[in-house]
Length: 243
Length: 217
Image (cartoon, rainbow over all chains, first blue to last red; front, side):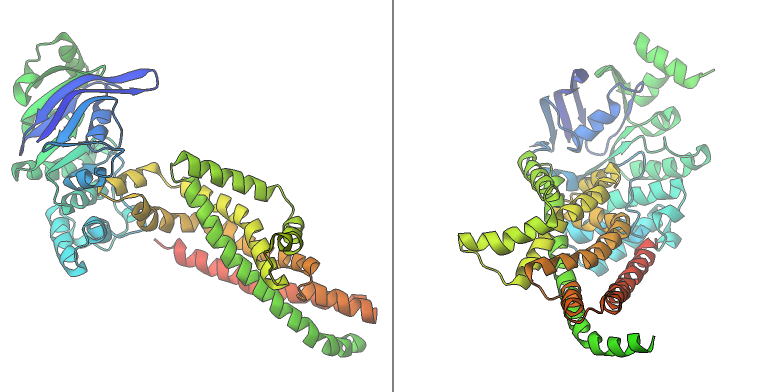
């Protein structure tokens, strides 16, 4: 469903993605792990057209992603994104954040959008917070609203860019719980994360990225418990045993 | 004091006529400069290099020329090219253009202060540039832009007196005419000052009301 073929990307002289090819199938949950600066987030941002890429192709269901083309807005309505820093609209309530896309991008009638918005907020456990403004919510609650906002677009896939990295440790679980429920419902997900427990339990596949290249990939459980490449072993050792 | 009051009663009707024109010039040029300033600011942040460059150049040219010279240009020079305005029209257009530069810089500062993540979030749910501006960026920028906008309104009220240089009989010019024909300088200019002050107070109150209203949430 999401196909990357030999994708390259440079920021000035820095060659951050150096020929990445990968495929994400419908209903699959893929986690991208790797050291900081390895290009994980950049790949995700390229898939959603927030960042251009210099070589190769990215396609969603065969449609090429090109952030300089007019078709990019259509691509973005098919693939939603959840950000590290939530990026909720602070001047709108939780419910308004969720219905913004359906109402104003897709032109759904207000009543229908509101009804579905309420269902989605209930699904992420925030039915009681529909009138709260983002600054009145905790980080975990904000991120769950952001997930509801992504779901409201009825996307074919959701991209998560380190969705729990900005959260206090005790709030991580509630967000991962929502994501796990989504995965169980069959949502196609690409997750950049440092949560190895989540990757092991929920992901179908894990890609290990280092210096802009996929160094190792495979089924989540076997890659995380028995990595074969020395760099993967080294990275996992440092993440799992920081002291 | 007695004589001040009797003279005031005599001069006030004429001065109030002038104050009426001052209000017309102020509101007219405020609206025009706001619209024009918004256009420059939108061009500036459009991400299209040519538009951005044009807006930047226009703003710098406008800022670099005194308001009075711009007014003279529109009222005295443009007729040579077959474009004629009444004094009132010329003053509204001239002040509007002159102030559009400051409005544009203020709007741009407000827009650029919004977190880039907001733009990305809007894009990620499929919004185009115009809708992102209208639904996400501008509503948040308003809050940042309002306090300096209040300053601009008060400055505009006072700078409307420059319209007197191209014969618009607004408050300052009416005052000068009465003073030079009656020699009652102190009475006349005290009244003129008080009238300007009186007119600026509602503006100041309006801004603090708007700040309170948009300050919520």
